[in-house]
Image (tube, rainbow, N blue to C red; front, side, top):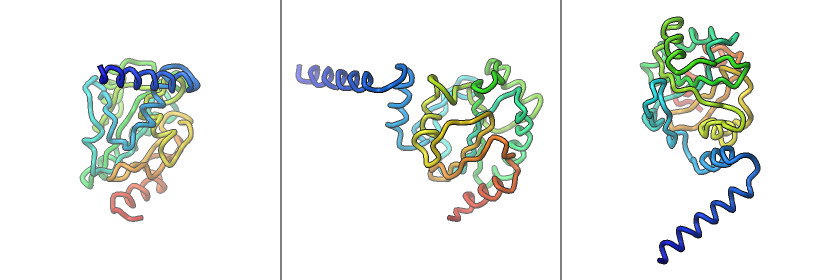
Amino acid sequence: MPKLVAALSLFLLGSSFMIGLPGTRAEQEGRLMAAKTTSLYDFTMEDIDGKPVSLGRYKGKVLLLVNTASFCGNTPQYTDLEAIYEQYRDKGFEVLAFPANNFGQQEPGTNAEIKGFCLTKYSVSFPLFSKISVKGSDKHPLYRYLTEQSPFPGEVEWNFQKYLVDRSGNVVGRFHHRTKPLSPEIVKEVERVLDGRP
């Protein structure tokens, strides 16, 4: 009985906390999950085939997280993303692509269609994840973490915005959607983080 009372108290406390938060229930739950998260590695995402992937598997690697779209003026950046991935992957570098349909409805396809497009048109070999939302009321908790809890708060502005993560899981950089992956700005930072330089 005491356990039941304690559980009920916790439930009511959580419910009253949720009621006090602005936004829809989905927004509230997303905020709570992001707020509870202390590391990028706490998230489990679905890959492009719908299989769960813990981001903890990337511990010790340098990551470039990118929200992508198939029908955007920035879509040719897939070529540069593949090139920078091939250039640095042997040093412990990964590109993680998160398709999203938040901007101009430029990623309307299914996960299977997105995968086919990326493999056929751009021959990508870096990890592709299932389509998520990176903005708005249904923003995925991973992107709530990146845009609200990381050292670089602020909404994602458009497709192909990039976040750089060091080997310890710290978000150490954010790059504009128009900044190409092979630009000196990004290459310099990737090399710096790979080398462990401050």
